[in-house]
Length: 311
Length: 311
Image (cartoon, rainbow over all chains, first blue to last red; front, top):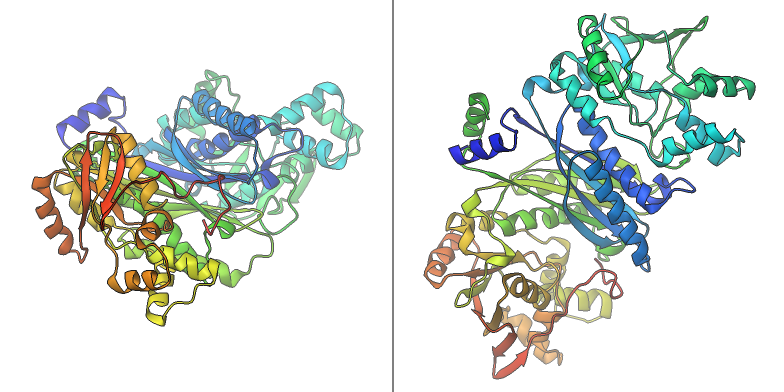
């Protein structure tokens, strides 16, 4: 690194960063485009899916590339919608679409590639959860599960609930600023991953990577959604644990002494940090909530294992 | 950049680099897998396609990510073949597969992302060609064109020619070390791009980006291939200009005083640098060879414009 580069990095406010974080995530029309979703929304979701991984590492996004696969005869107006969605998504998170590749494919495919920067001591990993730490989530559970039931099982829901559920699927958000705020509190002490494959499977992945277990004492859920689920004979906890996915909230394991500071820091970004349980040395994942005590199964989205819902 | 990073970069021999170069290129089974090609070869080709862009910039590869889209029911043995091909390809060019994403898609899709490093004054661009410079190519033309004719038009060719032609399609190579060697001679003075879309269209793209024209005086071609083409009533120059593609040779525009040094430098890497013409201020692309004088048309591979051959 010569002086000119050090200076350029300083001018960009990048002089503190030491690691390049790179991530890729592919969306296809058949797997990721829920009924009723627009191409603009699909493109924004592709941005969110890629940035979410940077978020879970606490990295600052540098930019995105997208390789486009377009089917023969794909309408130009949809190409414009997709481009608009990619740019809007990048802008929303303060980053850029830097370039890409355009090719032909049997179905619409957007393969994204996100680069970010991190400090060595700010990097959050899946493997950093420690027994005694608090488990937390950056958002409420159950909305995407309700969305899936509405779209794929014909469940009828009141307008307000339906709108929120569909919005959670059509316009997911990534916790990019939240991840960076957590990293500043000492990322190497914090275990983190996003829950895009579902809460239960993500808990198992975090625990397995960290060689720990967990007890869940609380799953944060909107009261109206919970009442509606019970009214429909649905199990609210099961909805949140097993029937969601496509949520880009962060699952976080952090020392008790950092929790309050983290809560305040995220609160200033408009994000409520929900305590959901704690990490154990015993390698089991247990639900102890609402009078129940049971093992949480490692179920959730697994590619090529089950019939796709939408992704 | 703090001292630790500067030191880490120095240890890796990276302290001279200033720019991150990022590139993406997607291959799909329907578009990129020629008849008779193995999955291992397809995966290596995906690596080559991605590294070739770094090569044309003169960048040193840092690593690759791949997002995989697999159709339901895709055989595990093919997955292993693909993984082997990716790793072999990366190793061959002294770089690494750093990670990726696995998902389901309607057809086999490999979206690659290559990252590399470059010095600011080493970066070669499409837009750097200047009138008076020499135009050069890193390899012989016509082999992939013959391959396409054998595979898609049923042309019969002698064994030796057929083997070479198919190898050029099944196992293309990227000029990664060659690109870096050129960059060391002063990349900012050198115009460069790969000719993966075909020679004629690439000449037009280089010229257009640089706001120049070109005169082609010589198209390097194997003598036996040329004799065979003439024997078959095929126009050798047309084969090279318009009917190839999928070649990852570099098209280079460089100052006359650098040419000899560049030739020697590439020769030490086992690569012959062929002079093919010169750059002009007049913005036309002219063929003046073998008694012919004609305009070279901007024809070549364009996605979504014509029926695919293989890519």
